[in-house]
Length: 118
Image 1 (cartoon, rainbow, N blue to C red):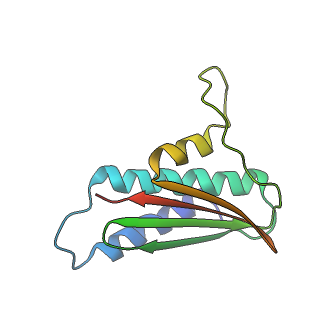
Image 2: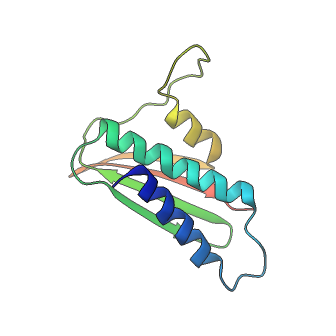
Image 3: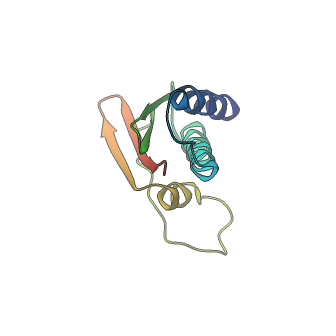
């Protein structure tokens, strides 16, 4: 899966899941979802292996973004370092999410981020 394609899928999913709801989705929440998807897919492309799977699930107040790939090396959140060039993706995901879960699975790994929509 390409990064631009994943962002498009996320935008379309948000738009479709918003239909029929009483309240507008804050632009900030939509931007956060796009950025989290972009960072997680980028990490899977750069550091993972095999097929990449993106899953999105929404409740009224939250969106769960899950990315799976066949790589077995689990990503590690690094401490903030403004002097470091690159490798800030997981920091960004953690800053934009209520929770981040990283798990090894039988066929690789899964990274799940829970994002507040309000």
